Amino acid sequence: MTIQTDAVIVGAGPVGLFQVFELGLLGLKAELVDSLPQVGGQCAELYPEKPIYDIPAWPVIDAGELVEKLKEQIRPFAPGVHLGQEVSSFEKKDDGRFRVITAAGTEFDAGTVIIAAGLGAFQPRRIRAPGLDQVDPENIHYKVTDKKYFADKDLIVLGGGDSALDWTLDLAEAARSLALIHRRKEYRAQPNSVEKMRELVAGGHLTECQGVVSRVLEENGRVAGVEITDLEREKHEIRGRELLVFWGLAPNLGPIADWGLDIEKRQIPVDTEKFETSIPGVFAIGDINTYPGKKKFILSGFHEAALAAFGVQKHLHPDKKQFVQYTTTSPVMHKRLGVEKDSK
Image (cartoon, rainbow, N blue to C red):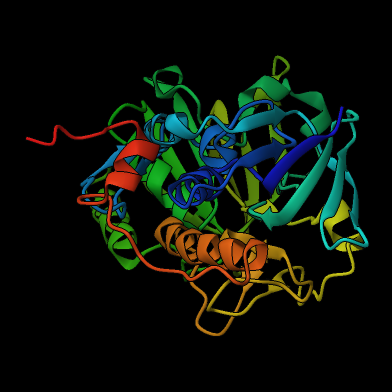
């Protein structure tokens, strides 16, 4: 049976979830599709316990908790949610609507399509080094889902971006020993995180090394550490029993690359009024899009979702006058949110 909807949202990460909310405020129905088995995107799949500090009104919130709050926020709009399904077919019909079919056979007749697929069918960049096939892969981690597992253990963190530094800082107190290995002296992480990391090094709570992993060390079938080649081409052994690899994600647009969209460097160009792509009626928000001044923050994606919702409304109802209603005062908004106020 074909599901009719105002919008199919491809990607159920935080930005995709918030898009449901913004569409719902405008009285528009959405269906969510995601290849992952749960909503939340990278926040749920890679770092559900990672603290986030730049969500307005939340001084700090774990990524997993943020996802739960977003799920609660969209509950009044009852979106269809189709998980573990990748979009396999996309077609613009003669009437201007879109036929979208997933690999599981779910078919949509959609007025618009919103791509909120993050980096696409993302996969963590994995370690490849001699000795890897001799150790238990359970001791090599590309995400942290339970911080307690790493308590009182000898840890090695690989990476120089925000995830690597965030987890280095977060696990430093609980670990028995901790080493951070990055391929160069300069870090891509936030300067404040780098400064805190340097303080841990100065205090003797962290070993910092520059170099590339040239071998994974094995002992009784388990990770015993890594051998690195430093910037002077000298080899060193760094001991540790758990290896945490945060080398970022390998972007892969997957079938989206075949939709006929304009694509620049594996990203989708959009305008900054409606966040519409080169195909009218198809919008892109979050990390997957690109435009002058683009910043890959979750809060930027939330802003994009708000403007894209008005773009969707205009595409579906081009002759309807648009105006802004505020959730604090609008009876229409209160009704849609299920929080109708007492008229007294």
